[in-house]
Image 1 (cartoon, rainbow, N blue to C red):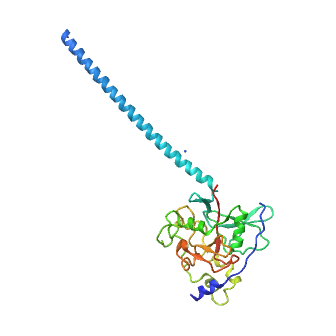
Image 2: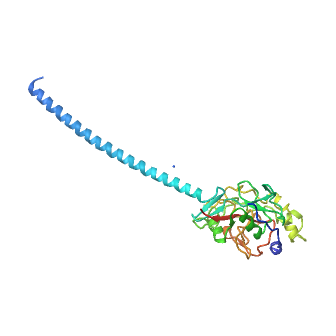
Image 3: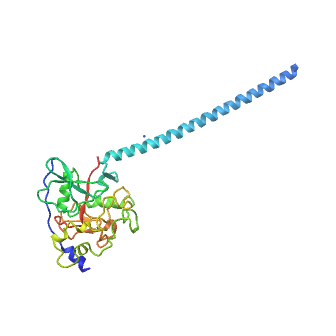
Amino acid sequence: MVLVALWLLACGGGGTLREPPVGSDDTDTDTDADTDADSDSDTDSDADADSDTDSDTDTDADSDSDADGDTDADSDSDSDADADACPPEMALVAGDFCVDRWEAALETYNGSAWVARSPYLVLTNSETVRAVAAEGLVPQGYISGVEAAAACEASGKRLCSSTEWLSACRGPENWTWPYGPVHEDGACNDDYAGGHPVVDYFGTSNGVWDTAHMNNAGINQQPGSEAAAGEYAECESAWGVFDLHGNLHEWVDDPEGTFRGGFYADASLNGNGCEYRTTAHDFGYHDYSTGFRCCQDAQ
């Protein structure tokens, strides 16, 4: 507990961002004739009945077919509408807004093109960066709320509000964890096997709770620490959003400083699952555990 308390007290600043370029006889004969006539009449009657039955059946079949077709068409229409509402890397939440399916990584502008950058390095004042989200990318840690907001803006998005973030995490059933009402071991990256990532990396708890040490690039490269986006396939919300619990803390749009969801070494100290919230640091704070994702209005 002493280590956690010391760790929560540690805070610092970070780099700033420049604005990017931006579906046989007569009787017998008569009798036979009458019989034949009756037979014909029966046959005609049967034929009429069959015709009516066939007609009804065809009508029902057509009706069922039309109904099925209408249902399929409606479903396809809804899917198309959902797809049109958000970019491919984002999920539509409650028909209201879009949220990145994965925690954000960064690209940096080198003067002529956007290129990938290390997710383990603190931003510098000279960098122009933007947020990108894709399965398999290692999300950016070591980032402040100020930097995260600017990176989202550079991608034509914005930081999620707390309300949006919680809606994306809890889903329409208001679950405690993204995947359901009960915690499932191993579903998310929330069970670091070591002691404390900083202490494990430096081999001591003495003199390591400052900005420089807690932003060391090696911390999140230790085994069992930060995971690539979507690596924990079961850590998915009802809306199709991954890693809202564990992996990295996620900044939300709060100038006073709030990040949510917990991270790989602590996803319960300040609340369970989606309820996890840290308000101990200002918006300019960053360390190895801080990440983010972006939101935008649905189209």
